Image (cartoon, rainbow, N blue to C red; front, side, top):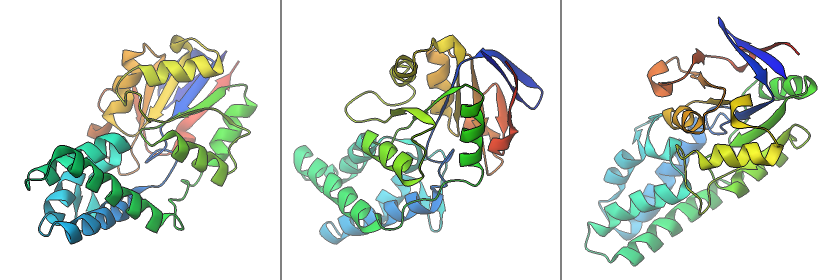
Length: 244
């Protein structure tokens, strides 16, 4: 059992910490914006005029992306469904619309696979420090499980990350099932585990699972994006291990 301190808040008897991936450990803003823009262009080439509405739906405006928007926080499946809804408005059938949305996102991901998002500075060092302190660690992401595993391999995190939880056909955040699954993987009770994330869904998921606490991180300084957090930080190194 470990005591964790963030600013003036302490969490006692902690055995595990779970992290969101996009926007928390991974600096994914540029990648996600490029993904949405590329997918919108691909779909617009088939259905002229739909590109701009899709960008708005994704939460992309020119060179900015809404950190609380669809493509930033939704699962891949949710993004497909939202895009398909816009496509269906053009008069296409639902299954055709889903197919077009899925293929557009697949093609955009393939185009960008050689330029993945980087890890945030300090992420590796924090994970190493927490692991050395005896904590069990995991990632709970709205990205697919394959994406989570690829991130862990790419940044050589497998020695530190025991739970690699993504969203495939399972419920997405804020459903507590993801958090409970992570707890089961590492062998702890929810009330001994913390969640660190950059979105309201992370906070709600942890609360729904009756976690020990929720740490919101906002690199851009907008704490409303992590409403419901017990404490809000702006750098990962603000998470400190006080002792055992």
